[in-house]
Length: 178
Picture 1 (tube, rainbow, N blue to C red):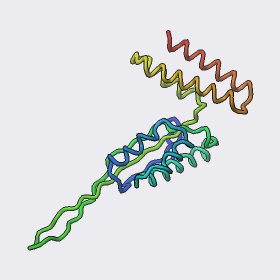
Picture 2 (tube, one colour):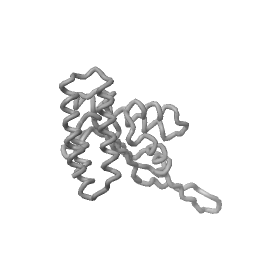
Picture 3 (cartoon, rainbow, N blue to C red):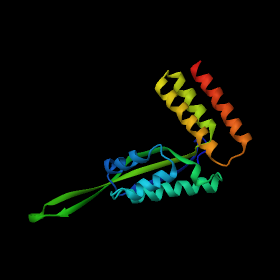
Picture 4 (cartoon, rainbow, N blue to C red):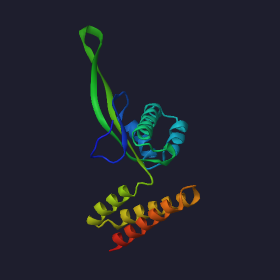
């Protein structure tokens, strides 16, 4: 599924039979990581919550590669969140006609993947954070952009494409300083 007002491709899971806290423990480890890193982390973690999250991350990557024609190596998890879902309630029979309630908690998981080379995303983040004058966030975005440039230098992209991205990054740095 793809929403027009959102940036990137996402996958959404409802009624996942997990505790919210246990799912957040895993989601916190993969937020902001590349797609390949996330797969490695989820494959090696010993928690039961890793399996449905791994399926969801791979589903979001498939959505991005199909809908936006982006290679999976270029994807980054920009947003990963877990919210409380519905609670299924059952009654377990007990002695003398009493019953004991059993609560089965569920959660909703959302994973959003973006293209690491999409400069528009970083521009939006810098502009929104510059209005709030959060210098630390602006610097972290600039460092992410500089890391992207280093990745581009080491890869086999066109020189023209690299030069355009470098010009955009330099302009964004000047804008964020002013």
